[in-house]
Image (tube, rainbow, N blue to C red; front, side, top):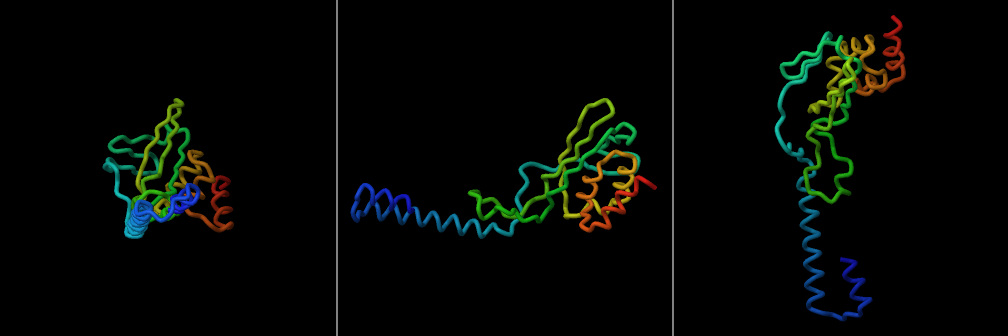
Length: 174
């Protein structure tokens, strides 16, 4: 809208019905955009597809659908669990899209590096921020067996205090 006013001053267009109509139209669309943005502010983004399969972590294996991958066949795993259902999209008000402002929790990945140097990447949905805390003993088992890195564990287990970090780091020494 300011651009239109600026151009009209440069070109020295005086009061015109076309310019007035253009300014009112632009302002109306701007207000509609703001209205849509705030209407979707607290809604969860819809999935663009379907969730298929299961991802289950056990002490001796990781199950992906019906396939059980033995921990012995895994060289390293990395879990990126930074998104969960209900996470507010922090740049929602500054972005130019009108999708819903709350995440659906699907921007999480499990990267498995096998002993034969092949990799597999699995995307999964996380329902809560610290959901991996429910399987903390399994994550500890992976850490003790050098299947997952220390910093990855601290991150996915939502450890925020230094004494928790030290206690967890010393698991390997016991």
